[in-house]
Length: 125
Image 1 (cartoon, rainbow, N blue to C red):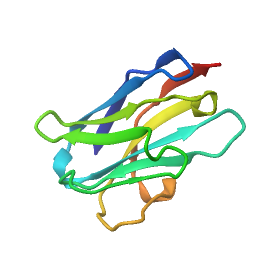
Image 2: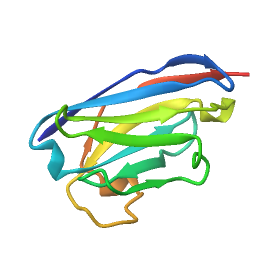
Image 3: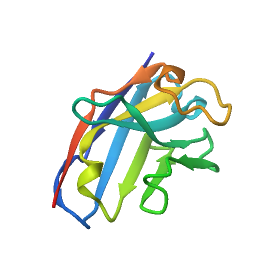
């Protein structure tokens, strides 16, 4: 079992920045690739970013590429999502998730076995 707890969400004006954190406990954090997803009301959960176990490789949805950065600190069992140049359409509940498999291109929520409870991000125009 891996337990995940997100933090760092809040209300920000368009163009602003937020940094989300996701603290993991339980099994060895460095054994898992990590992802961030988001879900807006009435919409499906969508992929935002993914980072490999070592942190060397990252992957992003086109909608956030160039604005968001995923990173991890395996010594602190934490994954981060730095969000810059935020837009109102970024408003959603943001979730971190852990994937025991390391293959690339795993961007479906079904690929991830462990989830946090989410943190709300609201971007005002």
